[in-house]
Length: 366
Image 1 (tube, rainbow, N blue to C red):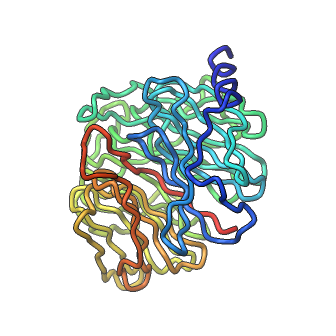
Image 2 (tube, helix red, strand yellow; image 1 turned 135 degrees about the horizontal axis):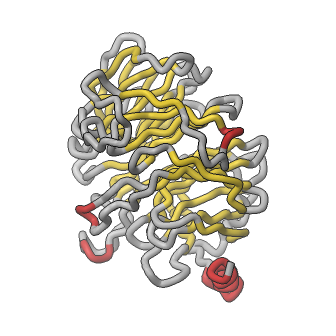
């Protein structure tokens, strides 16, 4: 509680920052929120005009908070960000971008999903990142948070290391979570958070995976989960296999897989379930897969280096793509996969010590 009060007092003292003082919050445009993990900020961009609108400073405790992922609640006009180094989940006002509250969950909170109607937020814990000086949290926990009060309602220990990918069923009853290390995914009954002896049902990502989910086989390295529109199919980006694998949510059975590029990362599925979009971290591209025919189109660009986040506008017309090591945000036509705009974040060239490192992306239409 003491650290939380310090965090809120810091904002009251004026640590909130916007690079645009004349930003008209009543103006209607498509906004994207992008975490800048290297500079402890969240960028707000105008997707329609490919312009940077504001930067929200989340460097609260001077340790390198490293904002990683954003989700938006359009109903209650809020947005949430995970700070993987300082261990907080923070809540902001969607209309003013001012900090409203925060909750400490522990080292390296990662991805999130939210039940907007009931204001329940779910948070996974991070995968190991030895190349970035992170040796993993040894966490097996997923957190359930009351987003209205920013209090932890309970946790579930999935029994496998580094639960990372996370997706909530349409009715809010089931939370799907995948281990980045154990090549298993889990169906958590959301009503059972907080039960100390509860073990969610588990499924293997492939027939070559050990049945024991306590074994870190590091074969599939699941990264992110998304559901199709009716929630009947679960897509899992398997960064260790170069595939997105698809499972039946009623049974957990494997249905099919799509080859993507090297190390598929974040995903988006179009509202009509026609296309799957995947950032491929080591192929330096974004692949559009036609989910009916399996045919693909690819977007690449000169500075598209280690693409990370991808989000689709509500009308299915544009993609927002973050290039984590290129320090560029791209606006891409979702049908043709041709770039329509870009925002270069670096000033004065590529300085590795001062990179913004854009990662998670979320889109809202005002």
